[in-house]
Structures are given as structure tokens and as C-alpha cells.
Length: 77
Image (tube, rainbow, N blue to C red; front, top):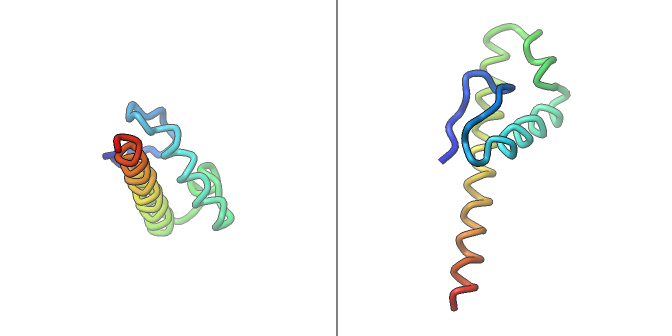
């Protein structure tokens, strides 16, 4: 499972770190922000937005992993 990094923009050592960062950037972009613009927000708003972005990325990665397992199971039969 992918863990949420305290510093979203840093290089992740997780296997899906690049995808996780892309999903976080996508989430922020849909809300009119970038990783750089979020730092200008008040701390409480910044924390809430980054928490929501990390949750979104985690859920999307879980969905992708579940689909991959399902495809693997189909291929085995």
C-alpha cells in the first residue's frame, strides 16, 4: 500500500510514487491548484487540501491495483 508522504513533492521510494504524485497533481489541478500554489494557502486549508489529495491518490491506486489483480486472475484461467 502506498503511504502518504508529509512532503508531497519529494521523490518517493514507493513503487508507485510517480503515479501517486501525478494523481495528487491531477486532484489539485481540478481544484485550481498546483503543488507550488498550495503552499500559499493558510495552513489549515493547505493541510485539508493535501489530505484530500492524498486520500484521492490512495483510492485511485487501490482501484488500479485491484483491476490489475482481476486481469491477472482472468489470464490464469
